[in-house]
Image 1 (cartoon, rainbow, N blue to C red):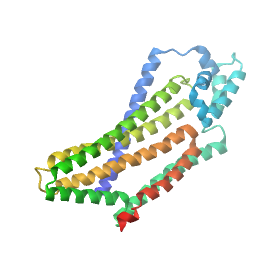
Image 2: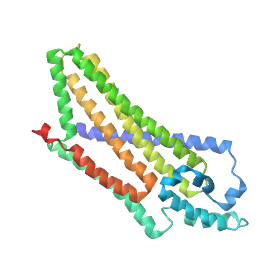
Image 3: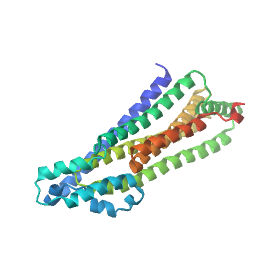
Image 4: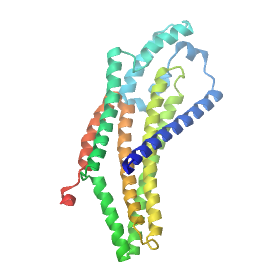
Length: 307
């Protein structure tokens, strides 16, 4: 297997590990919350998703997708007879509470939109990988090549001071990007967790919202991880420059570009998952299509460099 195959396997493994850890953390929090809070019988009988609390949340002001879904649920639950049995109320609520099953046609469109958005992103990067293997110049490959040439120049000219200053600036940029991603994730986590913990655990929509949240967390943590790896590799290269006269540092500098590219790429993809949470499956598909057009431009080598 080539190094590119191992890189793809490595990326997929990281994503699975991060997703698994997010699921474990969420399960731990959910178990803790269940032990500390008792659900009232009225909430079980009526079967509502705490829509009164949710509507008072400022999140609904710019989230039409979730607002439309919960507004119909709220109307239905307020009109229900509070003396209905638990089974009757639960079954009647389930029929209107799940945005993926509320209507056969709407459900099919939503599923197709989510799968289609994920598919076009996967196909684009699969084609990009194969085009690079065939020798097509891309922004990532050219920048990786430039960093190798820069490392050779520093080693031959012994410009250690210049190298340290350049690496220091690059490390600062990578750590800034990593902390920015984590800061955004903290804000999103607090916002979504407030909504999730106030919803009835019997509400099917709660699991759907948690799934969206886990996907967002996985993408953003993977992005932050690669930014930190880029900073780590550049720190290691700074110590190796004066003492290693081989091409090991050149290869490390190529890896720093690959890590930086992957960090930015996962950050872009996480924007589409946030669009899925805020706007729904159709908005996710639209954002994925727009992202492909954007990636085509930034992955293309500028004419000034290509010439």
